Image (spheres, rainbow, N blue to C red):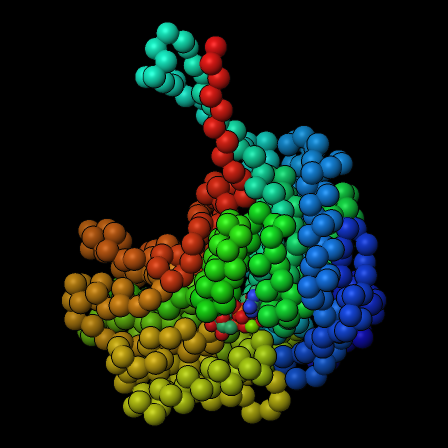
Length: 500
Ligand code: NAP
Ligand code: MG
């Protein structure tokens, strides 16, 4: 396959698609033990364009054993921090050399615009690997002046060590396949862990290509193993496996709870990055044009399939009409098309199921009295398109206001005063992110501590940085990825007390 929707693919992308795709276990590419495969679908047409192995419990078993061996024996277990840094930098260089290919794989597999895949998914993944490479040599414990009241006539010395947590099972979603793999793999490799990665069934391709690059970079066998397969089979076998020390999960709150319980049964460490229903709060001093552009970016980026999507837009009633009109104008002007087209701004949703789910929410909104100021329908032809949608005439207890839609659908809600908007913004089971649009420093600062969310953006939305911890309050998850904080998720602390 050299072209996709009439667009020429990079030669290396065509080459990847022409080769058979296999599981990576212990440094060897192999079919699933069952020999079964799963179809990979083009979301812009609904056509199946390749297959991947349908890995299951026996494959997970072999991968866990390989990751265990790599963690405990051989080159990886003995590797110095500076060599782990060097390897991660080499991996980042290889990702950079393959950036266009990785972006194209994301675009054809997930449906997202290739320009966004390149500028966001691939660029952030490379930067994050470099950022984590730096941490490999900076994982530190502390020394403590201990008192030990019980034994007064002896001296003691206390210190802590940070040790890699061990074998990590990573289960990731389809919305940012490469980036979510990088968010798990980077800290695991920096801290000396080994990993079994289970990508989402809808988007397995970039994880397989990343695994090739990991091999090419020179990582020892078994450090990374990739098992493509279904969540309720391969994913469940991984989450509940007694032979791993940590599960790192990103996905829905519903599945996150299952994964968390399975992990806790074995006292496996677990971090969960789950859903959201993030508020965008426009104060009365905000410029309506700027707020409308910000709100559009907050909800339509990645077709709204973003855990931090700004899906509840609270606008001060004095600005409501202006902001909604501006937002609807942007929604109507966005170029919809296959992700691989260079001009596409809105691609298809990832799957038929996701399109049905999102349209189901829009219909429930109509039934409860909402009106679409823009969008509100699917695309005209084939593919899993949903038009960028702005719902008005909504009230706080509608399903479209309460539940995570995970599509390009925003609800616009007027409010009157700050106390009211703080209360309504927090009236959700989720707490992943929020944004505030205003230049009134005092009011912004008064609002920040009142918002129950892991990230608050001011006059921007969906701005991620490697140095900033990322994660959720409430049902949006447990733990913080990125920044120094992520090391806590991939290391154990050991206290050492010596009697001198
Ligand atoms: P999901 O079912 O939570 O999937 C996330 C990952 O978990 C996938 O790799 C999935 O495998 C796996 N999985 C599913 N069931 C499992 C189980 N019983 N044990 C272990 N792993 C399991 O999410 P989804 O199906 O992709 O999307 C459903 C909804 O989740 C979306 O509509 C959206 O609301 C939300 N979501 C949130 C995020 C986020 O970043 N917060 C990301 C994606 C989706 P399969 O691919 O085989 O299902
Ligand atoms: Mg699923």
